[in-house]
Length: 302
Image 1 (cartoon, rainbow, N blue to C red):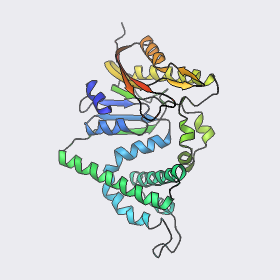
Image 2 (cartoon, rainbow, N blue to C red):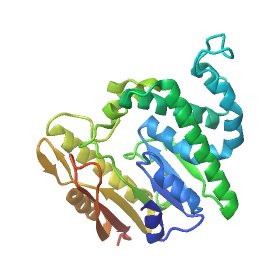
Image 3 (cartoon, rainbow, N blue to C red):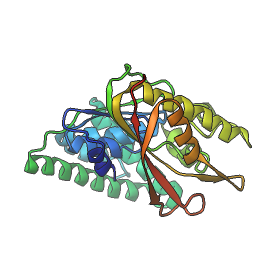
Image 4 (cartoon, rainbow, N blue to C red):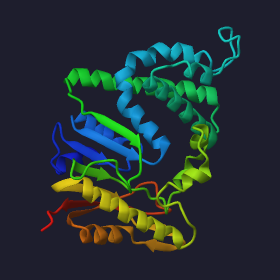
């Protein structure tokens, strides 16, 4: 879907797309493959780490392979690990940030498998590490085989309500704001965020949609989305497009009209809605059944 949307809004090699809610990095990967530069921003350090892994690990493929034996021999006591050193001890020896990020992510995935599915940590780590390395190798191979000129990626922790970008510097925006009213991302990723050293109560204050209780929560969400939409308008070049994938969630037994709110406010600040596409959601029927792909164009101010 993201690749199709990049084509639909007419982005070409060398252009820059922004995703102010980069999440797990899909926009970054698809833009990279098409030779489009991507700036990805997210308030979640876990999302930033995931996105970096997906777009930067190909730069250090050989170094990742080189560190595999050193890290995996620390996974469980053996004749090769008589000192009882841990995975963390090995990972902390890695100087290259991209390689260290890769192995830290493998560890977090194993922790997630253990917490969510009860899988034994060591087995989960070894299995996921093999899958991750295989994925990087496949990526590198296909880039060489097709002689792709990859786009540049810049993934960083930031706030969609105060983008660190110049006015009218972006060629297109594709994003999906958090469904935090329906999904509590802080609680959902608590195990990983704690492992990364973050205090959940502190980080909760930074996330859009999870602040406040009762009716205050959707009100705060709407205020935050207004600021985010205003920032998207500010950084986007005139006549260019922003694509927002969003849906109406159910909160406290009531449907929250997020789609209608987004359309109304976006048009109020100068966007023109050019397409509204229904998209069925699979797997979230308990909170929402469909989302909308909203395509807006930034109109020139008269």
